[in-house]
Amino acid sequence: MEKYISFIADTKGWLYESLSESINNEFNEYGAMEEPTICKHFDASAITAGSLDFENRLFPLLNDLCGLLYEYKTE
Image (cartoon, rainbow, N blue to C red; front, side, top):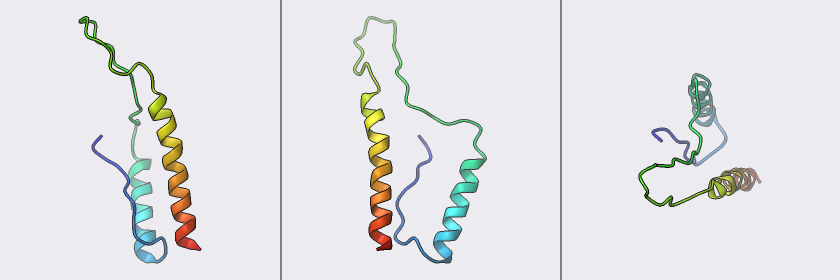
């Protein structure tokens, strides 16, 4: 994945507003999203992971972590 969202130090002020607006504008222009997939090769090699359980648990945890960090910073 060539693009990602990182954490920023502060969530108040003109710098945050400018970054937030810039990121939202960039993501609004995307025509498609990359999503986790399982690829199976038919060359008799073993599949290393047969499910998306890790991804299905990771993304909600990241969302919860972002919410907790935001609440911690604003209190």
